[in-house]
Amino acid sequence: MMQIDEIQRRLLREVADLHKVPEGAYNIRANGAAVGRVSTANIEITPKENASGIDIRIKPGTKNESVHIPVVMTQSGLKELVYNDFYIGEDCDVVIVAGCGIDNCGPHDSEHDGIHRFFVGKGAKVKYVEKHYGSGSGSGKRILNPGTEVYMEEDSSMEMEMVQIKGVDDTNRTTTAELKKGAKLIVKERLMTHGDQRAISTYLVDLNGDGASADVVSRSVARDNSYQKFDAKLVGNEACSGHTECDSIIMDKGRILAVPGLEANSVDAALVHEAAIGKIAGDQIIKLMTLGLTEAEAEEQIINGFLRN
Image (cartoon, one colour):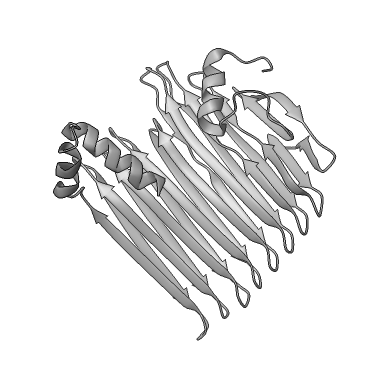
């Protein structure tokens, strides 16, 4: 697969489930440079002229097609800021797979900051998958700071799957969205931190049209001395509906802060927030141990099942 080494191949498998060159359009970035780029008849990928990053333009009516834009980094001390803009035409039905994997075996911090803007056309349907992963034996940190902006036209829909698998030392994820009439946004965040890791997730969703709806759900596990903050705010400006939920397991000396934010500027805005933070129930562990698992194995089974749901 292009000019990449085995470590970079492993990172691509982790963050984008790529075992070979993907079908359809793709742009693969490694250590600050594009190592592979393909456009199709309906999806055009072009590099930006005045900044680092790409523009992805998807023709109206494009259906059952995908675009992959993963990033991998194996160079210790590398820091980059990339801007990617997605223009999704009306009445599309597409899948966009992003994600970043950092393998840092050196003493210097490695950092990737990606700013993604989505302009979703009227009636379009988008599924967006973004996975983050870190590995490597070096003392340098693996830092990921994604910024996502979503602008949704009437009757469009977008499902976002945001996953931090493991190994990311510091992340500050900021997501904003503006929804017009009948637009629907679903966000599913899955996150696990361990060691001294820090993860902050901030969401701000403006529901600006009648019938607009948003569902932002986070499931997370904080282990060891790690810290997490989930800050989600919904602003209902018309007859709309919104729901946010933080469901977390806390272990060891981990810390979790859930910050709800609901702002209703219309009498017909229906907004709900739910939050639950707690430890693994002892009876769950005992039940699995009676089936032959050790206590540690039982904990892992419970965590894996919790994050999959």
